[in-house]
Length: 294
Image 1 (cartoon, rainbow, N blue to C red):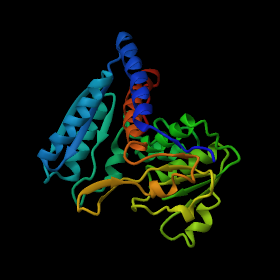
Image 2: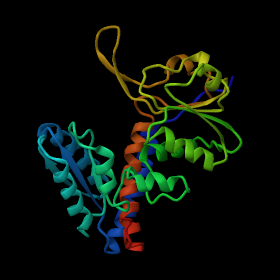
Image 3: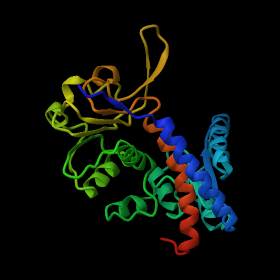
């Protein structure tokens, strides 16, 4: 039996960050400063925790980080005004909108306000829509991370049966489009899918992104399948302690899959690294293409 290849997302993420640091340094030499301006709405204490983590990651690759905080009572108009201010500031090359926003705020509408060229997460509907034409300005980071992992594992999706379980806007649906563009035969499964096993059992490539702990078990998996687990779930173990697990029952399918990502330590670190890479990409694109989508 061929040994399962476990993808070390931390190592891959570090390599991407190292490449990004080199790129950021080169841009700086060319007079282009890469920045990331984060918007946090709500609890200021939680915002500071996020900010410390985000600032540290940015500093690792030479990206300038700034946090813009609004209170829990911020209105839709307040957030839009801040986004417009950052859009119009030429020193701002990347914008990150931390979620969730307070109740009553139309999150997609706020995301649509972000300049697509500064949208480092690739969540502006313009970028999501352009993905349909294989031409996003910046694509969603999680979907890009999945494709980077497939490349790292030397997996060519062409001609393979790919099943994507979960059709969220930043993972499942973009991944399905990416796989279609790579000429895989793609089946999209979701909460209303009947007899999930009948679909996943035929998958050469199985991507799972639903947020349901240990959903995928041995009976779901074809021998030798490539499995990428995007799910992140916090559960209690037998001793009542919290632990993080994925959507795939890792230990149970480990001997069946040919390639498998762990949780934690798989897709997550790669997604973070891709976000930083996208920030550098955003700064580059703005110098090359000064136009904006309205």
